[in-house]
View 1: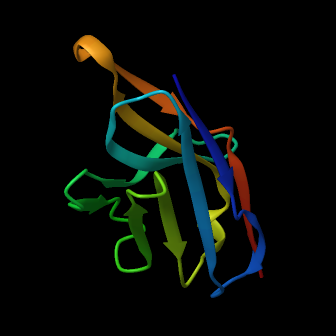
View 2: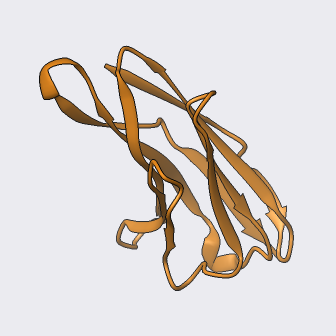
Length: 120
């Protein structure tokens, strides 16, 4: 199985920046899509950004132009660079990874979550 460990969350002022990291470890042959969800109290879970194995990216409209997702396949790590942060970006952020194992098996793994709090 794949284990995902997140880091980089914290408290930042409006307009500031944070960089989240999510490192994968364990037994797998390859990792395909990786991405980030977020969830704030009283709100639905939102898909923030996705990056494919060939580095194709997509973003939620609310973060497009401010957030950048990237990956380092050698380190099995996905990043989320968050710039121009707004109050509404406050949420718990979760990374995920789609992986493939032996015999065509596949699975989805989740990180433990990291809190991002934006204040004025």
